[in-house]
Length: 140
Length: 145
Image (cartoon, rainbow over all chains, first blue to last red; front, side, top):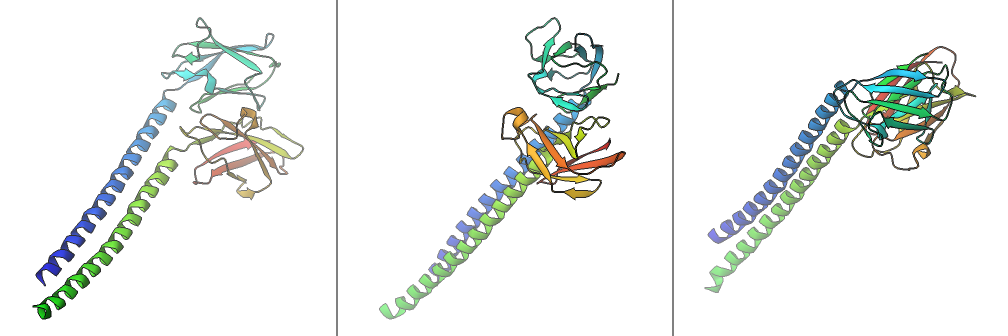
């Protein structure tokens, strides 16, 4: 009788350890995922808050315009989107170069970028959107 | 000797079998619970990290011949399900064409803009659009035609 109780108890104890182990792993993973997600959310919110761009000039004759990064975040020009009169234009229609740093993809705080388009922008509304979703509109 | 050991052996086997059965049930339930917790964690993480934005110019919405063109940008760090539910002025619209061809990709990756063509008759004036992902994350925009 004693051996039966001991054997059954041992089996139940092992089961308890296995269940506890799997629950602990799951809760740890849950907490870690949530922690990372909230950290990413905070980073994104901070990036959005510290991102600001503005139009410096628009040259409708040469179909170029210049924008400046007047925020605190470094922006990646590949992530920019441009709308001309509400129409999204793709990368083959415009070229973006950082003034004094030709070939760079990074628009550092204080940097200016010149965007040349192969379409006319005379009297057009221009909207530039950054990778973080921050945008600026030029209204002629 | 054999008369007294046989019932003990039967008790022992019965006890072990009952304990093993109960253990199997406990482990099964525990595993299911652990899996549910992990799945729920991933779902919540996915919802927290997912962010989309309608990047249209609200004063210059492309609308011609009854087709409204909407640009939705994925601001999440990961790829997301490209299925979208569209509501215009609070009414669900099912005549929608989604396209990622502008970016030469079928995957809605980070920073990729999805073009949405909506067949709808809109009067001149103010309207509102709401774009909802399958995980209930949404963005909305008030615009003028």
